[in-house]
Amino acid sequence: MVGRGVADVGSEVTRAPAHCQYRDMRLLHKTHEHANAILTALSDVPFPSTDAERPKALLTRCPAAAVTPLEDVPELARAAGVAKVYVKDERSRMGLGSFKALGAAYVIARDAEDGRAKGRTYVTASAGNHGLSVAAGAQAFGARAVVYLAQTVPESFADRLRAFGAEVTRHGAIYEEAMAGAAQAAKDHDWALLSDSSWPGYFDRPHTLMEGYLVLMQEAVAQMPAPPTHIFLQAGVGGLAAACAAYARLAWGEAPRIVIVEPEAAPALFESIKAGFAQVTEGPDSAMGRLDCKEPSLIALKGLARDADDFLLITENEGAAGSDACLGAGYATTPSGGAGLAGLLAVRGHQQALGLSAVSRVLVILSEQAS
Image (cartoon, rainbow, N blue to C red):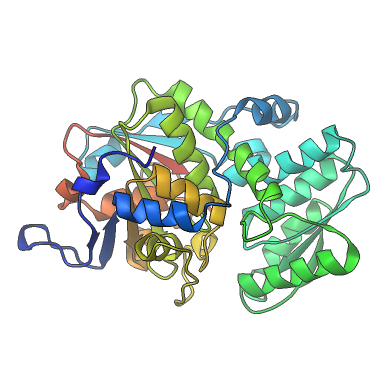
């Protein structure tokens, strides 16, 4: 499956026709040509898993495990000009405040099940919640966590990691430099590198990690009163978006229109789909820091080339407007956590470009709690 009949939708829109002007926004409608180019370029890369049962079975053994709520939020639907906005609220996930609790902790739980976690050192880089999942998973299963942080990451976050027993190392000015330091440390000390991204030669752990994210989408499918017409998914390297899109296609087929939302400052998936192969992008720092990733996960890129329909870039102001709208509706989050909703709000007034109307039912994920 290469997505819905997107070849009829069109190609990149940087300037829409006069009746559908876009300001401060870019939209890419994926075509079959886009998809086929990526699938060919990444032929040796695995697709995201759709097997939610194993992570569900493992993660439900955790004392902090619980299903997160899905809420029908009329205030947000009115703001977006649609019939329904359903919010999958991940802010309470396993006491870590983010969907990321489902990822790295699940990888370590699987290692523990195979007798390979106790006493092992897991090393990663983090700009936020992924590091907490590594730290919590290591603490739970008798392992050690070392988390590399760029100099720009607040010390308050470093303290949160230390509270879970993690060892924190500062390295580099940006996330990518911190990850390079973590990868080198893994080689130097024979530690297990546990990244939430993937690149040539590094697929097994991120593939397993993304499988953990399926749990939230499996819950959402069971909680939705009817299939959504649209799903807006925020993306950094793309792991959450690709896992959710893959499971949505498994559950609902080609009916929902899946829109991937990225910061304009970090258009890694957008530019990769447009080019037909993975791109390393450049841009200023984004306040949507959890999404400020300049290079895509290859597993995620391949999955989204198959499963997503549209790729949308939002500005810093639009990201802030999304989190403000969430706060006004009683769902405090960050610009990263509310970026899916921000994308939906950003197209208000130009909804025909994405097939939105007053009868649309939209699913979004509130991916993290307010800082």
